[in-house]
Image (cartoon, rainbow over all chains, first blue to last red; front, side, top):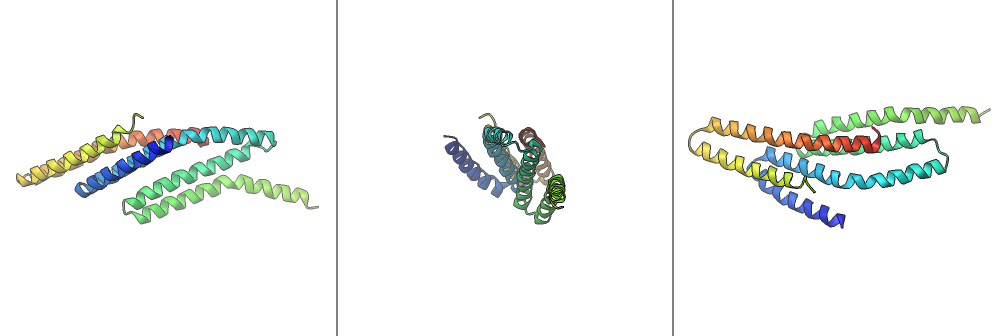
Length: 128
Length: 65
């Protein structure tokens, strides 16, 4: 089972991080960062089949694939933003984390402008 | 899983750097202890950046970023 692997790995990494952080705080931060990256790398490939299925479904429902791609992009930006912000917060840099989150929000807003545009176009077409 | 031993490597470097730092500062070589610490952080940082690069490539291909 994949989840057993991940939980076991996380427990080992947590113990090691606690030990190292007491000795050298800066290396403890790098250790927890590396552990987070490894866990994400273990999990992300399983998302691929879900996304393929979503693509297939949206093609079957004749939804424009551009919209699905935009949604997926937004999810990706959100994941990465959350990851970076949490690492910054772990390091005790709350202000930096807040800026990273702000940047993520701005980029998501930028990505969602075309969809908003499409909705407004549709509304104008529907209204006489 | 090839990147799990990276965690052990980082932990080993951390313990090693801490011991070297203690020994060097006990021997009255405080400045060498600082240099050892910085070198350890730099080495570990290089490894972590490589790993981060892999994560970013994966996310990029997965989400079409």
